Image (cartoon, rainbow, N blue to C red; front, side, top):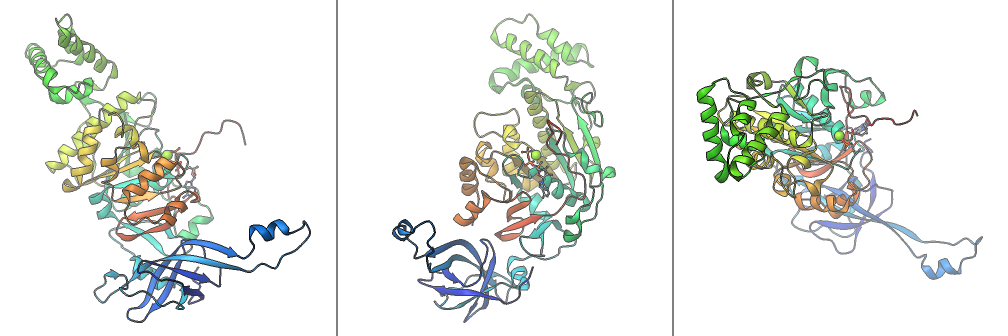
Length: 486
Ligand SMILES: Nc1ncnc2c1ncn2[C@@H]1O[C@H](COP(=O)(O)OP(=O)(O)OP(=O)(O)O)[C@@H](O)[C@H]1O
Ligand SMILES: [Mg+2]
């Protein structure tokens, strides 16, 4: 929707270096891009951050008006614009260091200027095409290397479009043969195998329907509930007693590690093919509080049925260029935490030793796996990956509807944020605190974003931008359940 070099108003009042007021002669929407000619640097890109309609129709005049009277009202449309910048000869984005002159003409920005200053360009090898710049036909492509190296968060209220957008992102990663592991608590992502039914949006966004059946594999600790998934188990004998403590939900390594080690060694010496049941039996009747706790927690581990004689191997679980879904639908929350703890630590360890390709670990409902209050069995490894994963080519993507409930140290490490509509004040506060360069106007806009429009920060862009998410090439699996027929 490029409207050329249309003049929309004039700068008035005191002019700052970061923002200025504009008296608008044409309607412009909040978030639209504007341009001002600078004497030294040429055309500078700006963005409308706030709008107000001022009038001389005050309370007194309104009160004096009868029901059928008409009033002559003088009104003007005033905007607050922020300066985005211009590109200098070296290609760097800079802002003028002398304020614009009051009275300067303000234009609607042309698409080539927007694309140049924002850095919107086609990256054939490294671009994840997620949608079009809001109200324009400019492609927004996220830099895949940055996504993996600098982590991602997808934040929105429930029903805001997180899973849909994540599906778009995973399609792009699969197209570029980036290896992914997806923690899928609701079993939503199996639909990545199937092409979407086309709709009108597909043509505008230039998207072809496509399924990724060959690149998607699915595992579940409970394949009876999830028949498309292969069984996921972990090998007891490959488990260090320290890791076994995690499964047992025991955090005091000092108290429990030595006695557990002794128990495992004793059982292993008499039966090398031992099972969790053998450990339970051996722990039975032990004297003292520690032995009793070990027995009780081993019984719990036996019930989870996660530990078998032969576990799912790492080479089965991670296939270069493919997406592995860990379908946790119907699995108890405490067992989900154990699965995430084991998978995340195995992947992290394998990446440190370069045994698996660089990969992207997606965690849906991340507030459950790295909570801000209390802790989950996988909290520690989630924090470790958030702070150190990038060094080892393990990118983390946290998806949550409660930004306020996810561990702040994890959220603040996610340098690319994909934000859809958020209305909860606590979540908005958490988002505003974790993102640089978010203006008050943008924070307000987040509250009323329509479904399918995202605010993107990072991802290779130096300034936050609004993006209309492209339609899915694959089927979306997160449709709400209809309770009564429509
Ligand atoms: N970009 C989009 N284009 C078209 N429809 C969309 C888009 N994003 C989301 N939707 C629709 O909005 C609905 C909710 O989206 P989605 O399932 O992604 O929400 P969510 O944020 O993951 O919700 P929840 O918190 O419940 O998991 C879906 O029915 C989906 O079809
Ligand atoms: Mg969802």
